[in-house]
Amino acid sequence: MDIKQLPLGPYQTNCYILTKENEVIVIDPSAKGEYISSHIPEGNKVLAIVLTHGHFDHFGGAQVLLDKYRCPLYIHEDDVDLIEDPSKNLSMQMNIKLKDQGYRLDEGMLTIGSFQFSVLHTPGHSPGSVSLHIEDMLFCGDLIFKGSIGRTDLYGSNERQMKQSLERIKTFSHDLILYSGHGPKTTLDHEKRSNPFLKGMW
Image (cartoon, rainbow, N blue to C red; front, side):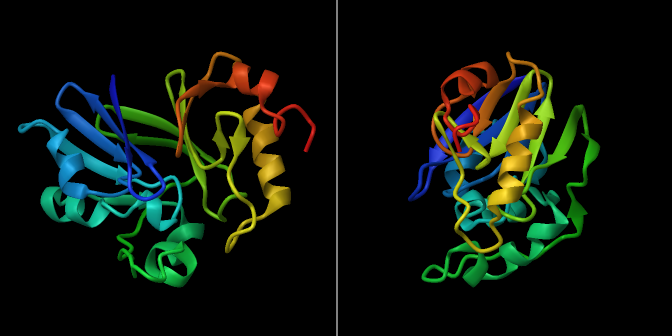
C-alpha cells in the first residue's frame, strides 16, 4: 500500500492518500481539494473519503473531492453535528461545513474495496474521534502526536475519555506506526517511552 502524507491548511493538518493498485481512500482531506486531487493519478478510483473527526481543518478540502469523484464520506455518528455546524467545527469565520451522507464509522471492521480497516472509537479530542487500524499502521487523527496529544478543551472534548482512549491504544503492538493529524509519523513504542501523556505523567 502506498501512502502520501500532505500537510495542508492553516494548521498543516495531514491529509493521507492511501493507494492499493488503482484504488484510493483519502483520509482527512484537510484543505486545497484540487491540490489533493493532483496527487491522485488519472485512472485511479477514489472509493471514499474518511474523516477521523469533524473539525474543519480535517475536511476543508473534502467538498471539492466529493464533487469530483462522487464518492461517499465516512464519519462517526457522534461527530456528524460538527461537520454540519461551523460553530462546533471551529470554522466560524470561514463557515466551512459538509452535508452528512449517512456513511458511518462504527466500531469494528470496515471494508471499502480492497482496504480493510479496524475502526476504533477513540473519543476525547471530539465525541466521534476514531482511529483507523490497517496492517501495522494506525491513522489516529488528533488522538496522539509525536510527543503530545490532541486538545481536550474544545467543543465536545473530554479529558476522561481521552485518557481512556490513550490507555486502549497503549495495549497495541509496540511497533505500531502512528500517522497523526499533525506532525510527523511516529511509533507507539517511541511514544510510550517519550510522550509524557503515555508515560502516566498526566
